[in-house]
Image (tube, rainbow, N blue to C red; front, side, top):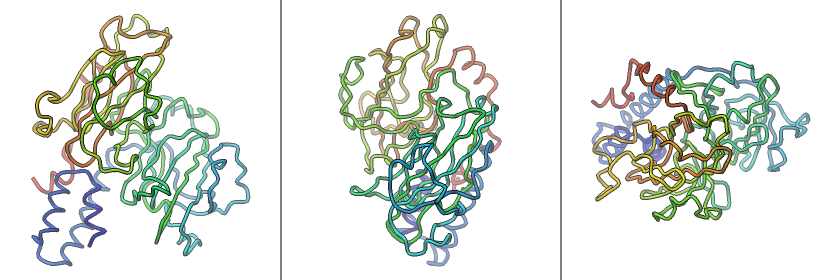
Length: 379
């Protein structure tokens, strides 16, 4: 039953967690009912979430595959012609590599049509057993779990990685390379609708800031300063929960920082910094000046969950003359997480013209089913 308890906790939803504690406390009628209910709810949740996405490119089917580990395999021009061809999603044991545990790589080539440049693209890879790093045209775009020697499985996490437009070869061939480590039992790209997707009704930015950010646990107000030296900080991906990347179920304060350049062509435009959804509450600084916050960061932040701030999309209006065009700018985000998953976990992340931002929200229509499947079940 432990495997199902772990699944419930990794779902990051309070209704799932309530169900978890009900199971642990023996409040269901039988072991059989526990198994059946968990499986049915998991399948319903996967189907429910699939309704939120529009598929742009399918990546299901044949992939090149090789066991072992060599970082050169991430390069787009790496010669994989002698590799095996296997089907994904499927465990590599079911594709002939029965009994193998350890490192392996997947590679697949696809053509990015010109239409992709008009979309906010997410690479969805379903569930990978146990740990992965994902490269697009040689650029690292996502990672979940931690590789040995500090191994930490992420077997239950469903992979969704933002694809920066600057890494796509629009109109030409693109190469996805996936490094995987499996410790025991089944391994590889286990299940899911592999492909490039766009979330229905996604906001389309003028400057994409998703990708690797500097990250540090703890709290120090000096970390907001533009000239603060963060070169010794960890690098993690935004958007993504921090637990999946640092191998630590950390709750508390942490900071994100990113240096970026705004093109001269943006000068004179009113802009909004979009930070997507943050679990749980935050303060945002641009070049050392606070430009917005969500939730009560003063007093006792432990009361963070009174208004479910983690569900809100952050959009902070940038004061005139705060950005430096054609030069380095620094955004710093102070985050407090009170329970389970934390951090800047869902996009979009970047800059958008104020007129486009306000138009988006004027025209925004919430999905017909706004509640999570677990809320519908347990309400």
